[in-house]
Image 1: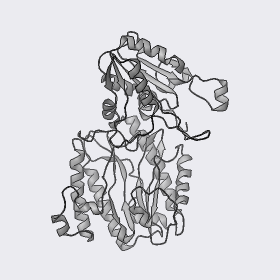
Image 2: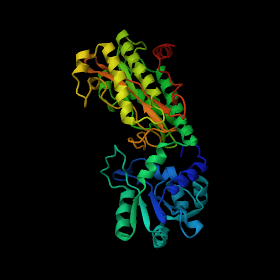
Image 3: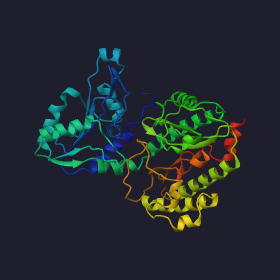
Image 4: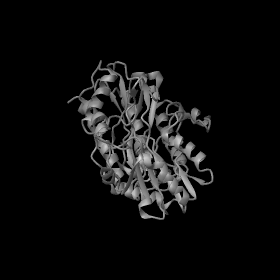
Length: 430
């Protein structure tokens, strides 16, 4: 891995929290992701399943974590299973975790090779009444490929039909949504790498540069700072491309007078950052662009203040909609009649701001979190309002990552990334 090793105390703490929520006499199993094939002998780069990483720090394929807090013997309460490594694998594929190294990474003392998994699991099942299976229940999830986790669940249900079944996901949704201080530090580090990439761009962008050249500059800066690269597929949308919310082609030339919407951010140690900035190709905003930009900035700043403990996500978005409505009225994009006659299910402001303002973030860019439950301290959210005007051939979105605080305003992890018009113009024209 490119990142510095994370202190295993974080993963020890995460496991303790999870096991404290398990039913008596129950086992939980977590699988790593597969390496996914492309064609012939080509594969996608490996990306670890975030749940096994959250609970163990293990960041390689063919790994399994078993938790059994009520096991009859202490050494059976936390077990890691790893693909057996050897000199041949080290030469052809690179170093894999040894049992000793796995303990250093995870804090788990009992480590077996993967070929022993079924034998050990069978013994655990003779002691246990319930199995926690790890299904993906994220509200945005659309999974068509059968995962290693899904294959295990199918096999386990056939092999052990007499056991009770429980779900890991509701526990993880709550635990992962509230970050430990070490996790916030890792997200901050990802944000700091993103800042370096953005500042690099401010001295690079000029008329006739291409969107893919901008992408290349960011990738260079991210990787040279120990990131694997982008936390998600980058959006580098110049001109009217910004009005396509998930524009990812990044193949157009940036023209003088246009704006570039940059929804781009680095990951670090599997933790995401998620930034959006909008900058002028020429280094100067027009008066109209500046007026819309500052309206979006005001909405962002006011929305940020509302991310406090006890806030309900749904009501929060209603309140943000009211602020956006006021700004759109001021810009002349909607009028009072539009508001008076609006459909409550699709308010007038949605014509120009059609997406949500905030989502949980952390190990996943759209991280775990139960949206019907009140916000809590140490949750991390994006704040990302936008105004999109196809008729004027530009769109503006601004996005920061903030930590909900027990008291006071949220803490902005992107506080050092330029966002004010004057600062962006100054840096672009130095």
